[in-house]
Structure formats: structure tokens, C-alpha cells
Image (tube, rainbow over all chains, first blue to last red; front, side, top):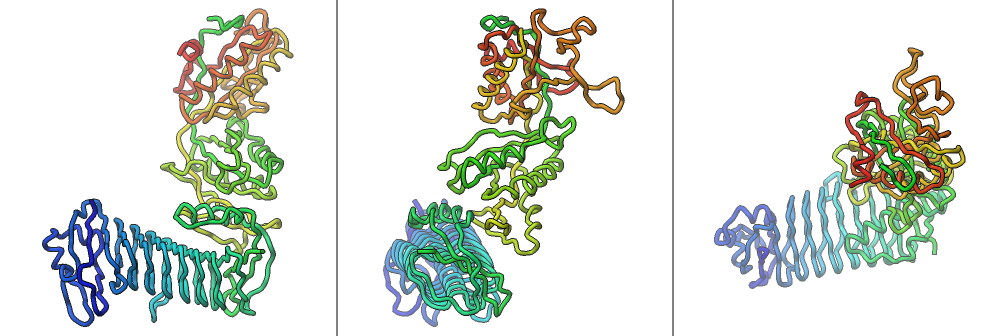
Length: 272
Length: 297
């Protein structure tokens, strides 16, 4: 039975549980874990002030129960193990994580997987802005790992990301891949404006039936059925994203850009 | 020992250690897949004078390939990982990348040892190549004139065995050819085995060494019907044609299964009078496949 943390006292102001990773939790007895320091607004508090704790973390799995929309930094910095959130989660879920798995059954806030380096995140519903993005002032966003959001996501998905994969099943906001350095962003739903602005390398692929209007600094190359996308479809499906069977035969038009930068990035737009 | 009307000689095939790699090649359809497979495994019959021994292990249905297209598993055998890396890279670069619509994947994902493939071939992209990590595996996308050539960065290698063999002897050349085809077809169904020679068989079976110092191998005079009377022969008195079936495989079990299937198919062919095997007194390799044992087990 995993270590279960049930929210018993809903925080009135943001509650930050940064550092509460499966490995860190394993170093505490359940009694000591209640004293694990958390940040409640502008004052320090203890984990036990907000959560009832039961079970064991021997299998390196944390299970959060309750609406954790106001609880932030869940799974941030984790390097192994598994975190499962039964309902919603707040901002910075999986931030800077290097390994392990996070699964959220509900919605998550902004900065999902911000600057993550490895591991996997699966969100069953929607995510906020700046999925996998760089924190303000940082040179690059996520550098590894995979983020799957089955629902919608906000603006600046993968902003300044260097490596890794982001896939959004629902609507995506404006400027995905803004300042992107490399990596892959796959978007299946409706899309916002100005994808790939200032991207240097990397791939943004529109797999759904909605084609975005591209910036004038992208140039059309040709239309094809790239073999690597077949592998991508299978990989995303295996990771829990609904992939339309028709995608296997879909053709994509390739655009190079952003030509105000290196122009080595690519945007693939599905032909409908 | 008799298998039907065919005499099975009490002898053994002598095989030796090699390294092998397995590639999964896919293409738009069977035409282009066969073109790539034939070309890539060409001039790869024997390490006596080729950089590798290669063949098609199996054809793979669309639903079992990485990209949902028709595929083939190709196997390559060489004496070392370095030799394999060079041979496989060269062959992929010259024979698969050049063939329209193809892609190449690692056929041994769980291998302990890897050799570079896309890591070398990518330079053909002249700086326009792109890498893409999918499911934890790095691929290279090399721009070519029909789109992109997709190749996995590295492929697995493992220890294998080369030189499994048996020699079928028939009363006529026609019967020997029929038996050779039947054997080859039977072995094609065995996983983990290839028959690298043309049509799966070799009519110029060889012995180690030669009276000419520069040659590593020369004709196996003991099995040449035309030399009967001039040299000591190992042919059945009624045999007028012999053909050797050579197998490379991933393990002793695979070679055994291949030899067993091939021998049974040959023995079921009319006119096959005897089946023997090639060995060199134990001096060539440490793997000995005794015909009576493998047919009895």
C-alpha cells in the first residue's frame, strides 16, 4: 500500500510541498513525516497540519487524495518513484524532476514540469500555462522527459525547452514552442496563435484537424508522411494519449523556421 | 543412421564463434523491402572474403514492425564488434539509405552491447540531419530525395555462431538442386538462423587452407565428385552431386533447429542418397553439431 496523504485541512493560501519526493519521504518515519516542513503562504508549517498520512512508502509511491488545487510543487525535484494525485494539483507539478512518474487524474496549474530533466508526467485533464517551460530568467526549459496532457493546456507550451517531449491532447494556447531550443511538441487539439516564435531547433507538430496561422518567418518545404511520426504516434498511445487511427495515413506539410533565429526548427501541419 | 532412404553419416559440423547484429528494415511495400534486403545482404556469403555474412532472418508483417510498414529482419555476422560496426554502417549507407522509402531499426533492443549505426550514417545529411528521441531511443532523420531516411542511432550486437552446415549428396545434380531448395525453404522458417549463401546453399564448399599460400580456403576436394579416384573421397559411392547448406545463428539451439529442419527436408527429397557435414578435425571452431545427436533429440 503506497504512502497516502489525504488533504484534511484545505489551505486558504498557497501551500508549497517542495522537496516532498518519494525518496525524501522514505527517509522519514510516518511520525516524523507529519513534521515535514511545508510553506503555507508566508509562514512555515508542517505536513501533518494539512494531511493525514497512512500507509508505507516502501515502494516509493506517494498518493495524494483530495482537491490539491492550492497545493504546489507536488513531485518537484523527484528522481525516482511514483506520485499519484487523485484529483487536481496546483502549480509546478514535477518541476525540475529528473526521474520517476507523476500521474494526475484532474487538472494541474501553471508550470507543469517546469525545467524538468527526466521522468514522465501524465495529466488526465487540463494544464495551465508554461508546460515544460523555463522559469523567468532561465536560459532553457525542460531538458528531458515526457509530459502528456490529455486535456487542454495554456500559453507558451515548451517555452525555451531544450530536449524532451510534450504532447497536448486538447486545445493548446498561444505561442507553443516560443524560444524553443530543441525537443518535440505534439498538439492534437485546437491551437492558438504564433507557434514557434523565435524557435531555433526542435519540432512542433499539429496532429489534429486545426491548422494554425504561421508567422511569416516560416517557410514551406513540402508535404509528406514522415516515418518518424509513426513511431511518435505509437509512443504517445502507449503513454496514454488517445491517437486517432487515421493519423497513421495522414500527410503533413513541413515548414522551416523561425528564420529570425537559426531557422532549423520545424513545424509540421496535418493536411486535412 | 537412415532417414528414410537417406544415409546420415556419423559425423559432425564444426562451427565457430562470431558476433551478430540484427536490423529491422521497413519500406513502403514488399517490392522496395525486397530490393533493400537483397542489396544489403549481397556479397556477404562468407567471411573468407566478405566483410560479413548476412541474410534475411524473417519477413515481418506490418502490425509487428515499428512503423506499421512491411519489414524484414536482417542478420549480419562478423568476427568482432568493430568489424560489424564498419560492415553494417557501410551496407546500410550504400544499400538501404539509397533504396527509396526505407527505414532501419535496431532488431535487438535489449542487447548488452551496441554498435553505432545512425551515429555514423547521419553525416550524409551534411548538417541538415536531425535527431529525434522517441520512447527513449535516438533516431536520425537524414534528408534524402524522397523525403527522409530514418535510422536508429545504434543497434545491438551479441555473440552468435557461424559455420553450422550439412552436405547433401544426391545421385544427380537435379536431385541435389531440388533438395537444396527444400532445405533452404525449411530453414527459412526457423527463427534466429540465416543461410548466407546464394539460395541458402553453397556448391563450392571449402576446406581450410590451400596449396597456394595466399589462399585461406580452397575447394573441399573430398566432396567433389569429379575428383573421386584422385583424392580420398567422403562421398557416398552413388553420389554424383553434393551441395553444402551453411547456417549462421544466434545460438547452438538455433543452429540445431535449423540443421534438423534442413536435413529432414533434404532427406525427404527423391534422389538424396546421403547427408554428411563439414568439419576440420576440431581445429576450426568449438561448436560441434553431431548429425546423429541432433536428429535423435
